[in-house]
Length: 346
Figure: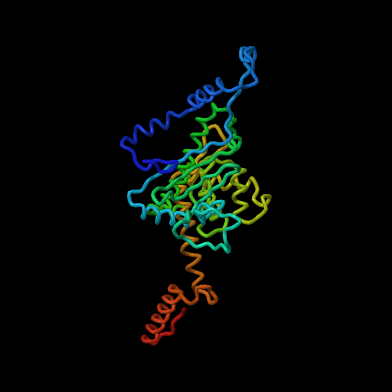
């Protein structure tokens, strides 16, 4: 059964995937050459004999993964949660609402946005140079994740058609990585002792590994960057500098290559990233993803909103359950001390 540009159901999904995998550069070339032989073109027989002919290039390549839910409502709830997660974890380029309605000059205004209503498709966008990942919940049935590469030079790859396998690997890896991070974000608890080990100095393989102090602005920005590398998965010192400067809100010159090297070293020694052999590139490990997401979520979802409720003037002053609970605890301690004829020290 069709699902627009996806497949809703299939009697033999394994065979279907094999058919899709067989669409490679050689088959595309064969179809194009077939029509070149029938359509007029400027090359004479002598030109073709001399080797002059058109070469196919890749203007845009899109690689998608569509996951159909047995319980569509649960899938919709999941995607709405993923959008919330990615606003502060993945920091997408934009989160948009696409209305299933054509707007013309005759369409009455004014336009207002309501989240989330029937006929509105929330869409998540993660950008990298000229390329992007787009994710949305398709026809209220399936989660669609697609990477679109608009410029192969973004990945140091040429535009000729024979580069399609390399682009395919990049596109599908980007899709998998986004889904992997979203999966970990739903369950990012760490084993006992891992948290304590990270926030204490240590000696790893005879080298001193600096601690990753929870709450330190530089450490929190560093861990937040680990959630950003969807495409490309591999990154260099210079790319880390760019992202760190953005998160810290400082000029690029303030976060020097030396600081980036220091931070890369302590991440590597802690096992949060690994260096690609025979290169100056790094990639985030599974442990690195779990640690980064946990630290960012605890700070952004628990500490910041929780502590803000403890201060007068908080926008949520009318409904501050944490503040009220602490006041009740404080009052109970004072009552206990007074009953024991002691002066409480608070």
